[in-house]
Amino acid sequence: DAGVIQSPRHEVTEMGQEVTLRCKPISGHDYLFWYRQTMMRGLELLIYFNNNVPIDDSGMPEDRFSAKMPNASFSTLKIQPSEPRDSAVYFCASSPGGVQGYTFGSGTRLTVV
Amino acid sequence: SQQGEEDPQALSIQEGENATMNCSYKTSINNLQWYRQNSGRGLVHLILIRSNEREKHSGRLRVTLDTSKKSSSLLITASRAADTASYFCATGAYSGAGSYQLTFGKGTKLSVIP
Image (cartoon, rainbow over all chains, first blue to last red; front, side, top):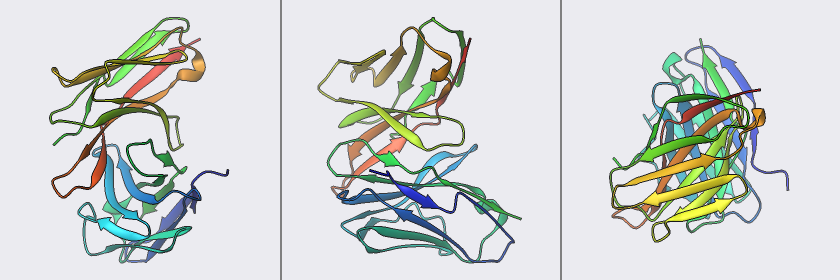
């Protein structure tokens, strides 16, 4: 099992550009989560999906952020337009459900200049 | 907020010593989990303790949970340099809408000096 796979590992973009982060969850995991980690705010839940359906997107900071899960093996988090304050490490995690632990990807370090 | 808060924020010990990290939270929980994050990597799940459990062991890890005090502790015995990482507690609970959420604290940064 390759675990949760995220791409790219690093992304540097200019303010105003569109950024797309990608995630492949563990096969068989019904839940997928997008988190953002910064020094100031720690780890924040942005949105999560159950069986490809968005369940709670209350953590998405603004309309500039959107997430999709077109199938059980792929999800994207898009920021359009990007701003310097979006700079952070974005993690994707998946879980089989219930109260079990989450498996995290290695993250995407986003820098918006 | 039910977000856990770890204490201390940073801890430095000698190899072979025990490391204790604490976590406090504010509302009722279903379970509490501990994760480790090495520099530049994702979080790794270490151990889960349910709200009806008081203590749990896994290898050199020992976790306690006191729901009356809304607190938990993570003990790492006989620490090794490889234990150097940030450790996060996460509280799991069901919201009013019935969805389950895991909320993370800001972590304790542990440094184990060889």
